[in-house]
Image (cartoon, rainbow, N blue to C red; front, top):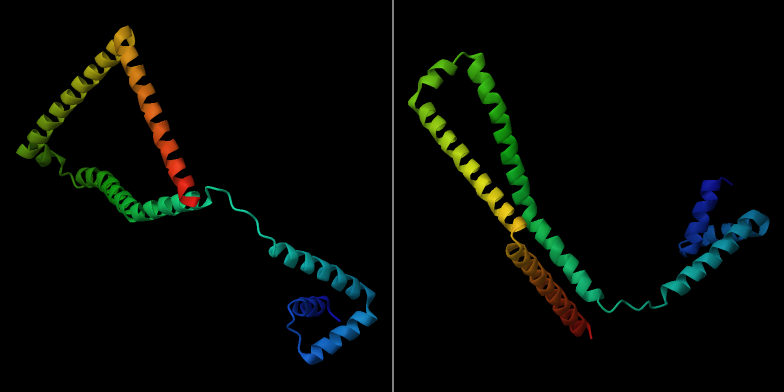
Length: 186
């Protein structure tokens, strides 16, 4: 008998799915072929062990329900944001493609000179220069603030103290969340 047919018979016998004719044939095969009989005995032992272990109850961790519900909540939050993220990425891709295609088209069709002479371009240049100046002022202000914080001991101590208080607060919130979850499961 072919190996695939023997495997099929053994699998169906383990699942109690043999017809009467197949069952008689399988019993005859077991008595004739010692290799198939050995395989059958081994698989029956493994099947019995798996059934026995499947009936054993395994205790769940104390925070099992809380951790599962946190994962479900996290999954729901990610699923809710997924369409928005895809939409934003698609929009950014279209903007990037237009940013590449627009200048190439303008220069290829020789339309850049009338565009440079238009009053809109003057306004855009003015707004761009104002934006650059605003960003530079912000950069200088940020650099001055970092310089002040890093060179003045009182300011540095205040920032470090604020970070310590924030970490303690976050730790207390985590402990509160864990104890609330443990009380829920109890």
